[in-house]
Image: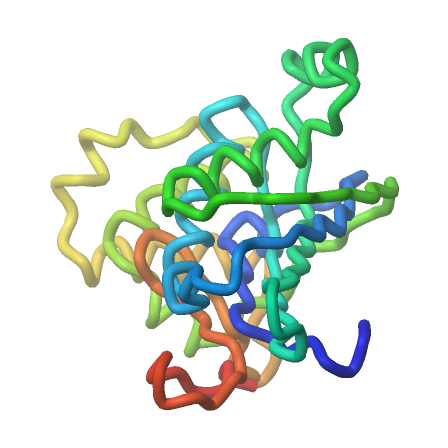
Length: 220
């Protein structure tokens, strides 16, 4: 990473605590005009990217957004994504001569009104091992995230999925208790070590430390 780049946003999605297997790691670099506020991306791209990926049938585990503040006329960005591409649309991307992750990221950027002037992407195949879940992470999950995570956990443990309608009838504490039960089997807590996360409106923010973003460092 060039020294002029700074971390704007780091996101660890709930699926990172479930998935084990092959994944794709993509580095998407692009340029915007100098009048595009970086604050537009902070806190918005994480949700937009997840929605675009899952809408197509893929999953995303991690995302990091970096910005280069040194150029005078243009703003350079780098987005690193770790995820699973959808099987049904991979062929479509290949026929267009465009990496599937580029399509998803450009679509997510368009949602938050970011205009991409030039871009490039590099993708490699890697392996992923699910992360341990700290108490801080679980406490930060919203009710909507808990319901979604429970479905992923039950699938991982080969249990019959609880209907969403039934989960919605449970109290927040009941959802958290059931999540804790499942998580204790899948991804035991690492002794209270917190991780930066973002899902369903719960954001792990980057470490720019600029007043314009009102952001702090991710939990560690």
